Picture (cartoon, helix red, strand yellow):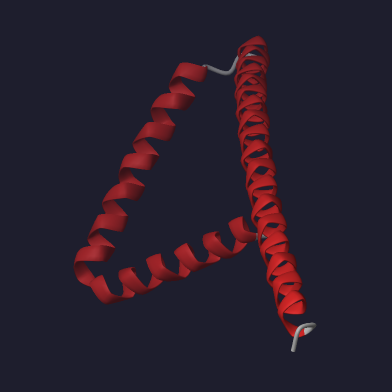
Length: 119
């Protein structure tokens, strides 16, 4: 029995060390995950800013070229606004006439967008 007590103490000490090592490892993993998340957030922000600037540059270039060939961009914007207003009215009418169908379509679109964003 004398050899059993030291073995139990050694096993308890080993279990305690293992627990401490696991806890330290988990803290290190959590720290690294936080750092990676912050880094990804910074990179996403920079990418968003770059894409926004690029989109603005493209829009300006397209507008300049359209004006250069004689297209009245202000009129194009007015027509687009009119058509958007008409489309909005059609959608509102459809929702009023068939609310369950509209809800089903909205759910389907939501699932599709969710599927695409998860990829």
